[in-house]
Amino acid sequence: QVQLVESGGGLVQPGGSLRLSCAAFGSIFSINAMGWYRQAPGKERELVATISSGGTTEYADHVKGRFTISRDNAKNTVYLQMNSLEPEDTAVYYCNADIVRRTLARAPYWGQGTQVTVSS
Image 1 (cartoon, helix red, strand yellow):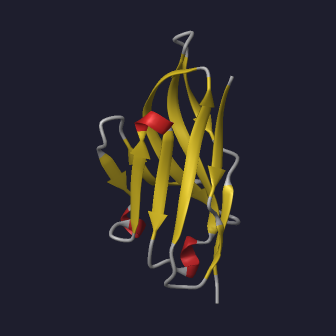
Image 2: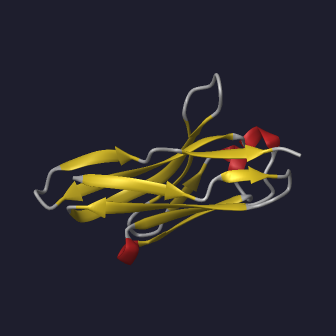
């Protein structure tokens, strides 16, 4: 069994910052790419940022220069530092991880989602 547990969401004013965390627990052999996605009301889920096991990062255009994705492989954890937040960043944020279990079965896993609300 593998589980992704997210934390760090909340309410913040425009221009503020938040840091999201997502830790993977369970029968894990290795983790390949990890990433963050978000879904705003009435919209489809979209990619925010990804990071490979080696640390290579990619960002959606609308968050470049404001968000930073990082990971701690020893803790099986991925982070998303969000600065200069805008009301348009309001969404439920989901983490995703490409995990190889100890049985060597490989599959994508999703966190439960954490709400980020940017409002004055």
